[in-house]
Image (tube, rainbow, N blue to C red; front, side):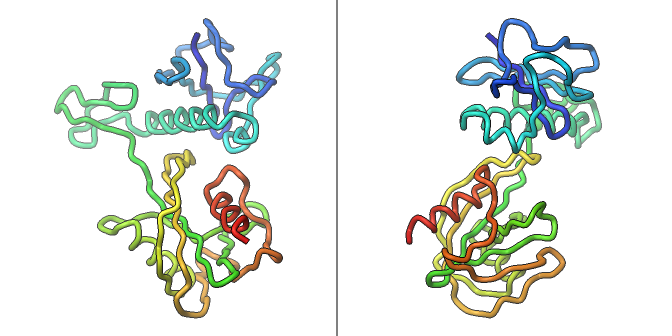
Amino acid sequence: MTRYLAYCQGDILLTTEGNIPFGDTPPIPLHPWHTVTTLHADTADCLIIRLQSPIVGIAGLQMVGLRQSYEILSREDYALAGKGAELLYWDQNSHYCGVCGSPLKWQTEISKQCPECGKEWWPALATAIIVRVERGEEILLVRARNFRGSHYGLVAGFVETGETLEECVKREVWEETHIRIRDIRYFGSQPWPYPCGLMVGFTAQYESGEIRLQTAELCAGGWFRRDNLPDIPRPASIARTLIEDWMEKA
């Protein structure tokens, strides 16, 4: 049977039981204006659908925010939902060849090719680092101006052309807080389909300097102990995983 990954802007269509719809027929009528692509997964073939408007009033179905679906879906299904959303975003933004301008055609389920010049095109990931900086029994937490809610997170930023991941970690910490760090170590990574990111997590130790925030991006920040933590990111993020890992080491 086929699984149906249907999206409308930042929402995904799920059953009221909190599952990805599946079956021999789509859960909703498909029309010529729906964008449809396919994806083969280990569990079943998937049909990826971009909806023009949210699905409402259909028994057994609900629209759920993709981020919110982390708390509903299994980890495997959440990863699948994220990959579907990324492919749909890439498809929407890759209609024409960047070399000769000709319309692209699907070559595989995750790539396109220009029929005129032969150039192959693949989804581009925006790679970012995120780092937990420790100072004794404290960690560095910051609050970005674009955060929704009141939570604090970790220093993060996009990797620039020509730099290593470790160089990016040092640069971002310096640019955002004006402190120096040492002992940079890889922690783990996480696909971040908002819309097409890869978050690479690190830990590091404080070396020197006093915090001076980059106020264009950050509105607050400081050193926090385990007993005075502010609101922290939701469980869906690697930021939360990094912080919880530190808390468990007490």
